[in-house]
Image 1: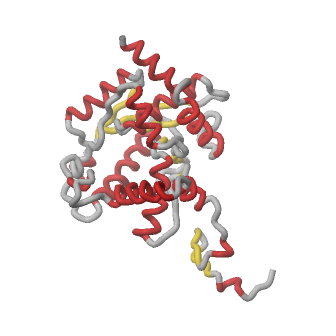
Image 2: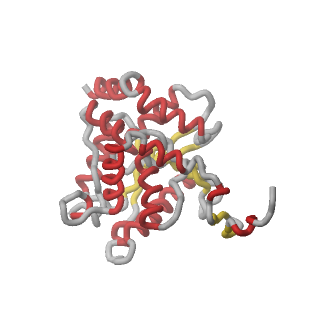
Length: 281
């Protein structure tokens, strides 16, 4: 029975979800050069729908690889409740993903931090993943952020951070020399990931964090809504007026005209339009 489930899951990626998921996954890999010959990639699995799908896509990619590369399926236990960890292990078995599980005490470390615990937790988690990946001989870690995460981040930066920036498809690590972070689901829509999950009758953990598992800000309860959920709802409302709004938000960071920007910054510092205003072309 388990073999039949695995076969159906894999077949769904090759057939029903080929255009909406598989082709967008491979497009991101090719367009942003995320996977290169002789890479050794740590596919980081949190246990949610996005990272579990990413793991299956990498397995499929290995079957069709045009050049040699290796993959480690990495699961970090930052202090999950036992039932959540058991669910991750069970889903990995159902989906035939050979996970490498390692322990950390991140949840315990940040539990009593009052200011920005989620930011600190995320930074620590990434550091642990980089460190373990490097220990396993990997040169890249793959995270399961998708298209909707990208456009939500763009709007959150503008509306709440007062800046124009995006979640990049790949990054060089600043603390782990020779390591990179890649986001292979960069062009995959969250709705399609949910459709794939439900079509295959799969059930993944939602939010296993100690801060949010009983937190009212995780769901729209009418009293308190997380900033990301506010942005998600805003985009949904805008889409009712303009069906192209999601694509346009994404394209906005591909079509930046520096001649119409008052100021911008890069590694060399801050640049103002007045710096070159009186210089003729």
